[in-house]
Length: 60
Image (cartoon, rainbow, N blue to C red):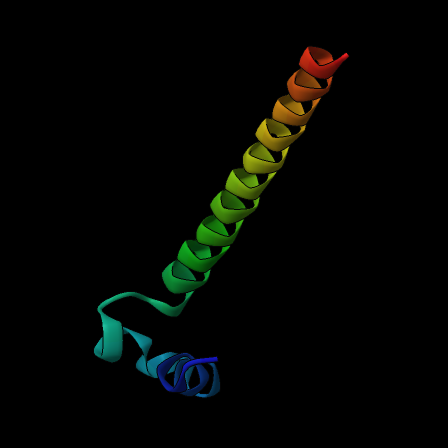
């Protein structure tokens, strides 16, 4: 965890001064980023599975 994130979590009232967002906005931004990251990972995995399937079909 970064020093600034640790500081913000320990002092949520200073969030606006430090990064220009309310603490709740920061939390929502982090949640959205985590969800987007999860979705991108799932998409990469599904593409990988399709490629593996297609490669197996061409070999057989």
